Image 1 (cartoon, rainbow, N blue to C red):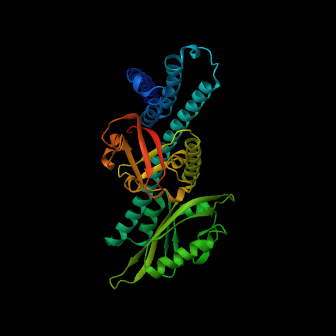
Image 2 (image 1 turned 180 degrees about the horizontal axis):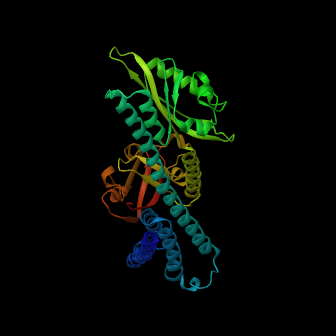
Image 3 (image 1 turned 90 degrees about the horizontal axis):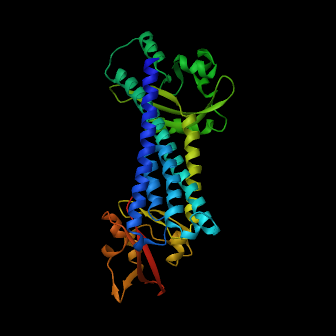
Length: 376
């Protein structure tokens, strides 16, 4: 009881600490934007989007939510026109606050799910690797355990463990297999291992097995196995060959790991990322996100149109490639790639409202544009 109380107190303390830090960090962002307001106005959300993004990343879901609502209140009161501070007469400002709130929630939710599923993925992969390493170590170090001893070890591993002869006929399953499938050991031996496989996955499993046998390679696939109650769940199945001194396969050792919940969570993350990407594409401003290697990670539709690209597939995938197609100049002076405004971000600097003349070297089109950049 005492340990539970200490754990709960620690968790609550950490949560409150994260929320307080998130609010203070947001207020610091507001102060910085207030000091720089002459340079970045009228972009009221200019610093709050990256602030909420990183606060959600490091302070968790509730930290991101606290930062989102604090940002909305600060922008509402300090940065919107005075006559709109307490009366939302202009629907555009109301819409911008609504969009920001939704984006803040998405940032917080996605980071929370990513952190949770990353831990689950690491745990699952570590369990698979540790199980395979343990099984292979026992065999390769020639510990000479008899079948009874091996069975005792395999049955305490919290995974399905199996062994086959060289042609794929199963000669061993631990208790986890029988408990999950509801099959007896006699029903599972030989070719009986394929009975619980989902009908759509049986050809895939057979092809993967034939490929492993032909190439003396690791047998690995994700497939659905029928539980004793009839429900199908996703499993990661891996097997490795064991060789004799002549290099001939004498047995296959493998494990099955339940990854059903992980697959479901990854699908939820994929859908959330699609929603986030859709939200970015709907923005009026062109958005470009680069990685440390200057490769384009995310480019929205508005950014494509800004550079006069109707076909997104033809758009460059790196900053160096874009420079060979687009020329950037100001007052008749052409800038090299190292002088482009986005380079400020790679140096840890921010830039805003930088106006340039741009031209396409391949089509001759010329236009003017304003740039903002910031690291995150």
